[in-house]
Image 1 (cartoon, rainbow, N blue to C red):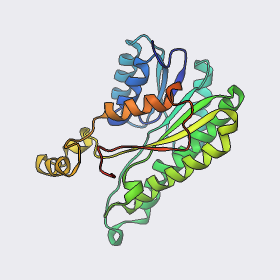
Image 2 (image 1 turned 30 degrees about the vertical axis):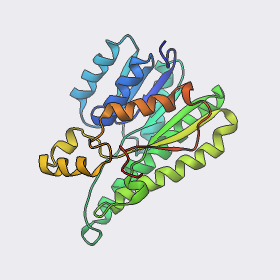
Image 3 (image 1 turned 45 degrees about the horizontal axis):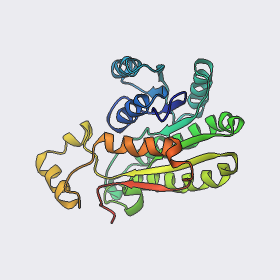
Length: 248
């Protein structure tokens, strides 16, 4: 049985890494998919075809979730093309790492815009639809860095800590309408981005993790599926750590 059959899901920033893994997992479980990209049109169209090959309706939209007008017009387009919006996965995120003394105001602001304000924009944009439906699941991507901090990532840590506070507040506001809001805090997830770190750095990371391996996008996607589906019908306002025990 497909857990999301007949549901429509939105995934922001889905062309690579965790976002791509999440989109594929939700589609495998029967969800129709609307997803966003900002610049990787070739990858977006390839993913669109791959999702459609799984037997679901799928459409790529060029949209920047950190801009409120983009978020609003995107959601309007989704409602015109799909029957509903049942799941929102706020995945879009960036890093602009540097020590605080070297970090520019622009880099601080941009990370908060993409990682935190985009979640405000998208959640606000879908809220009316979910309130009318009296149902919905919102899943926000935070990070273990938002829980414990990390040197050289004060902007990223601040944005991801903000996601946790936002998630808890939305869960309290919308719970009476059967709208759930949860967060996922991935640890060291091995994607195209982490490959640039070099094998020695990656090996050191793996050795520091209790499960002795980095996570995969599928590990995060499985957790997202749980929170998106009725398997977690009595779970809201929570942060699920998918980190191999890093925060144990």
